[in-house]
Length: 214
Image (cartoon, rainbow, N blue to C red; front, side):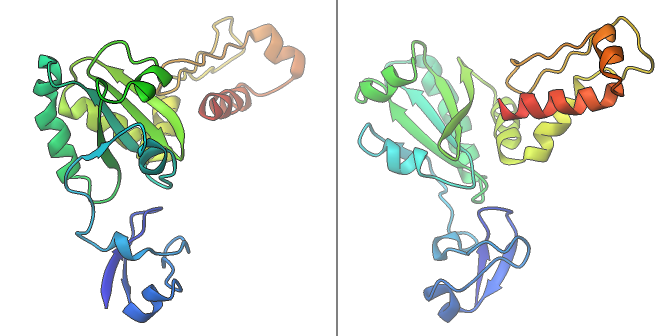
């Protein structure tokens, strides 16, 4: 029997090796197929070095967990300062996210594709989509928080909800909802709410859904 960590919900499953080999093993919590490479303790404990040639496979094709790409260069002092935090996050990932490093001097195609003009730049991808970007020297807790937001959609929803002011009545104050990437602002006036005869919180929910979909 092996203990396999589900890449979709992080649940630990005790699985028979024969089912694992025949791809019949499924997660007891979410029902997704379990992969042999997701055995507990078998996660990447060091950052993965990626290149222009391996970027598609290592980053864009990764499903179910976020991938952080540390764009750096050997001559960059802030890049060397942030390196220990990147290494620690990789060692603590436990399969919840993936840490990778991209030397921008040796891989100009990806640097140009994502308009990396300053380093270090941290790009966070989820299911082949760029979902977050951090520029400059960052603390380990700050990076970990952004990874947690990308890992846990419910956490991101709670962050979005924290930017909402509850309208107790049809006042003239606008509603402002800002998502975790700090763009996508939705405003609704009291007159528009009255005209549509909608309860204010319905508008809040719609705005949150629009911001998360963006």
